[in-house]
Amino acid sequence: MVNWLAEVEQRKDALIEDLFRLLKIPSVREDELATVEAPVGPGPLAALEEFMRMAEEDGFTTKQFGPWAGRIEIGQGEQLLGILGHVDVVPVGTGWDTDPFEPVIIDNKIFARGSSDDKGPTVAAYFAIKILRELGIEFNQRIHLIIGTDEESGWQCMDYYFANAEMPDFGFSPDAVFPIINGEKGNVSATFTFDSGEFSTGDLRLASFNAGLRPNMVPQDATAIVKGENLEAINEAFKAFVKEAQLKGSTVTVGDTLELELIGKAAHGSTPDKGVNAATYLANFLKQYNYDQQSAQDFLQILGDKLHLDFAGEKIGVNAKHEVMGELSMNVGIANYSMTDGGSIDANFRYPVGTDPETILAAIERNVADFVVSVTTDEGKEPHYVPADDPLVKTLLEVYENQTGEKGFEMTIGGGTYGRLMPRGVAYGALFPDSVDTMHQANEFLAVDDLLRATAIYAEAIYRLTR
Image (cartoon, rainbow, N blue to C red; front, side, top):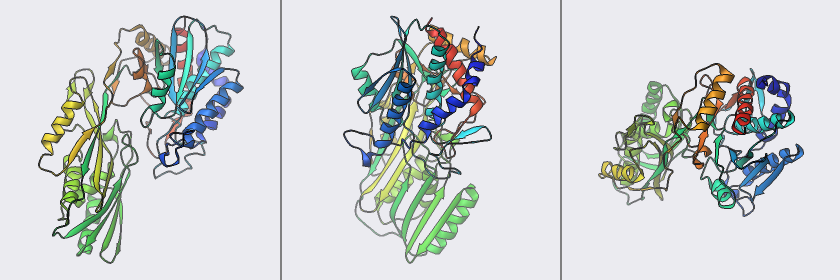
């Protein structure tokens, strides 16, 4: 029997070298730089092309699908195993101790944006295939390692890919945690829109409010500018608020203008309780004052009260629970307001079987009926579940148990992975139950030992799945 971990450890330096090639590319979606040739900006396309170049250098057959996706092919057989990863990353944000696109190993951890989500795990799966090929093992099924470029936003890459390519019979996405993710909640976003409206009497004017980078990230930073009199009292109250909440904040006063900044903690939007949402906290402070626009008052009341510290969505009536999939979760990812253009709030919901986007929208509308606001939802994604007795799930859990000595078990997450695109698709690693999850956070890292262990698991899993 092959000692998979020993084979990986022999190739440790080459594995890290290939990973660093990708981590150095700032592959954040940049719509303002989008072109026909690079529809989500130059960074994701550059990372995709580098991955394809790396595979070609290693002698693999590759195929690129426009600027959206790429594929690495190997094996022969009737069945098709799909392994779906991505090379785009979320924005950097603030709070980094190192350059997020100059990967560095500190205390046996690889620090860089994308190290754990999802360049590190995708390279681990790629290297697992390389190891199997180098060992002369025949693949009795076809394998497609599929690389996307828009996972952190709209998944347009996979829309394009599967409109032009074959759907795998089964497979996994290395973009979550072990032992396995065989259930994924539904995913829908609601946008609260506030028209600017007329000015009236009020103590303050909310000139602007800005927070958030992506709907699937907990906002780490929030800023607001208010205008009016008695700003010193507001300044002192804000300092007391920041101290009581054990957060970081700052203010700048110039004449009749006060700028406030609040710093929370970023986290993945599927686990909002693990972050500190700077947007809702700042609105929670500001909502106590009287503003000269009803739209500003309503914006702050909904953001700072209805949506504040309510990760299950109880205040807006959307809470739901399923015995296997668990509870609905809510993340406020983006919140913006200006006195001339009005405001918007983007709330993202990860929901279990038993509710749906229509039910969620109706509940929100009932619970914000007293405010001047309109609410819309996007198309979203339905819940996905592969039964525990499916051969794919059983095999992957057996491999996990064999490699770790730990008992495997099925799990459902709020996060959405490419695994859900395949009828028999799951998410599988690369983080372990004892790993520190820094996805979408400042100082994102992947432990070197976790990278090596995951690669060994992927190697055995691919071997077993292609017998």
